[in-house]
Length: 243
Image 1 (cartoon, one colour):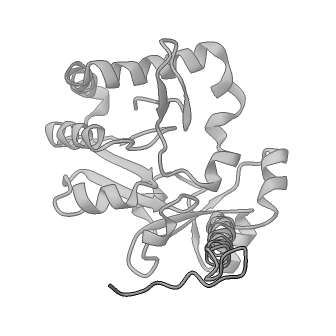
Image 2: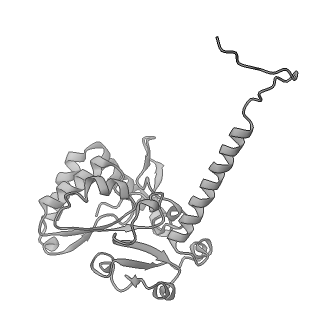
Image 3: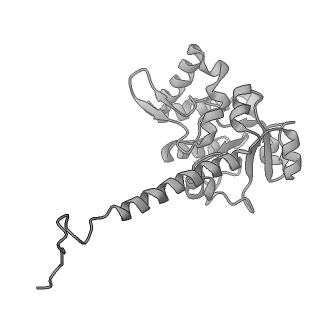
């Protein structure tokens, strides 16, 4: 429901947005940044949804509740977001209110907003909300694979089986109803597969994080070695004398 534009962009009025603030390597191979999602009419619809959320959050909540009141949703599972994520605290709280006001509907979601969920959702989650944390974001380090329900994207079904994870290929609901370690086979988009290089999202993100940390370490070393010398350029000491 409420499909948002994926990741970052600019609205027609000039405002910039980021609906996936914790996106990491996933943004390079995101299905929602490919194909029909890029068609002007589709993009305009998704941006209109976001504008509604941003400019009239109360009106958007009421519109969502009115839509969910339709008989077709009673007893059904509804996925929150086909693209986009819980991009702010206020937006997340809006969804929590919507969920509690629609107890006959079961909501589920993938999210990379680990820290936000730890603070806002986990302490008191709606009874009708199921979620799975997904790898490939800047908050991967906050995921506890020993206890959290987690999803990782793999190159294919064979890779999922070899890792001992369970695929959700048969039904997306397996991501929240099946075994806790969820394997998602990669989209078969050729240039996405080339970038993935057979890696899992978690592995690719870990590589990027390690490279970034190494660069930071190099920067710190350079900062230390480039500190002012104890000697002036003319060779005389720059001694500091106590008063």
